[in-house]
Image 1 (tube, one colour):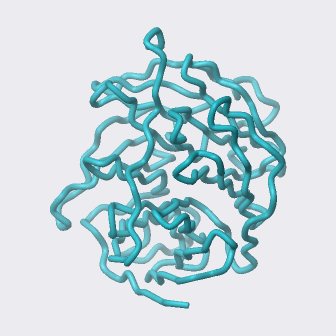
Image 2 (cartoon, helix red, strand yellow; image 1 turned 180 degrees about the horizontal axis):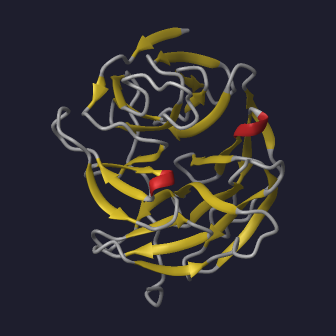
Length: 291
């Protein structure tokens, strides 16, 4: 097993809950969930993050919208919306409105077929309160899984036939077969169980291995498709939350939320060069009538 160290912060910003980091092919975007901000990482490492949009509700994650430059689909507040280039939201659905417990959307990603998948959770991480939703090309939002406590991911293999989804509160990442044509999920199987922290954001590299930010441990871990731990990236902070690969550079978001005495690097964005690259995040591909 290889061990790498990422000890240099990228830029001056410190986020409360930095997550949902994605390489779009042209740049890196991320969110500060609780402040509702969508941010772009600069090309110059010493420069500050650039704000692309700010919502009045928590913003869990976004994916670019194919054919609409500057537009995003977002897991935000109690549902799913489209964000125009001016940052204004157009809501597709708010399925967690009126839930018995206060819920918000959390992590989300598009699959290679162009659908968008987003998880929800209770603000207080109440057990089994969360769900996973799928947004189809026509904008229909469907609950496909329930009984999740803190969903993170999903992350997909290049062929779209496998989805990795963490239930962070339970320390488990499951592997779900997916029908790329219909988006239907098959029966899941355990992929990785983490005993010393919580699996959080993840991404799949070109070799099919899964990089997972492990909250509470100060590490990002790369697991091979058979579940074996292959390498560890160590950070000088305890709460890594999101990961992406911009070619062969690993980007890691971290958090300050809940720390009694945050240090000077908590909440920073970190980078580390690795020897297995990733590919750009998939885009949501809506039908022409979806706006």
